[in-house]
Length: 374
Image (tube, rainbow, N blue to C red; front, side, top):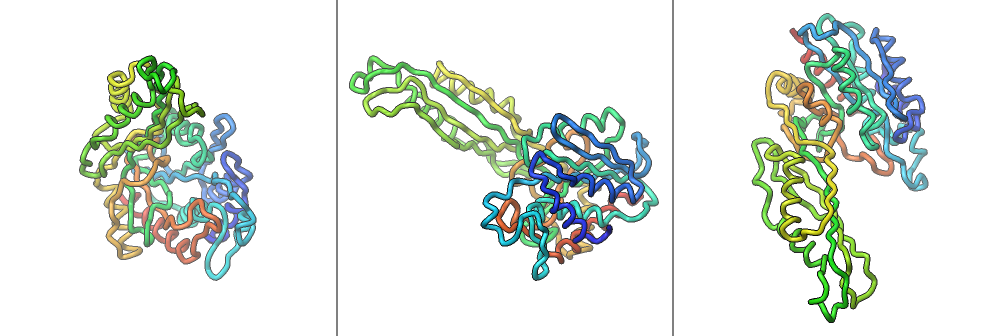
């Protein structure tokens, strides 16, 4: 099977709602083994992952390009709202429909179809995970240390997320902001609202702390990143009476931060503000990922040349958006994200134009040739 549409259809027809696989990795493995790749399944807890490699290995100093993608998809939601079965992979009027068509089974199919029958130089590998749309703890995050332990780390990596915006290849993501959540509970002293002097209102303390955290911007941005932001995403007070000062109040924050910060430093900042305004508090922090950036250089230049040769566009280098599996790869090698247009990811009737699949296949063929050129 070499046709990109057939490959994409075979993948979409696997109901691989995260963390289920339902045969999706089998589709990928069969194709790659037919091209001479050595394949290894990596299973961590309930998640299946696949590593495949062709060419010299073992850190010999040669060029080694890895493609990273995920075959797990988000649930289709209300199936009745879909025009067709979300996993039927119907082609209608030149468009392929189905859950994962855009994010990102179509992209994986394009890369598979772009792989040449043989390669004269360098090493080509793929890391395909089943845990990108889920907690992201048993996928690439676990696989990268395994690659390091087995001397299989690439010298560069393309993550195939659908990062193009209006046209294929108009954006290459060379980094991502860090992301963290903070869960705050402020304790006070319950009392009657008519006698506030006998109580300690935790809502007032929490509001003062939140104001201190959000009143001034964290920074003004950096060379490759927009300014960091603190967003209050929720508040909760367990109180149904209008004349009672509650005993505690909670808030939830999400911080997207650039390379001026790290998660630990921001956690210390939140703790310091809480200590000043609400000494009796609890703070729990979850860091989803640190910020990272791949500086422009030979690898990024090769991607830009491939895009220009295929589309005529001068790709814009970008670091916006949410997190991706690239955050787990950045400390091991240069990584960038290049994929199709993300116009329908996670939506009802998710789709990708067939013409875009063919164009993305040609683009990836240029990426492989350009990145592995001596």
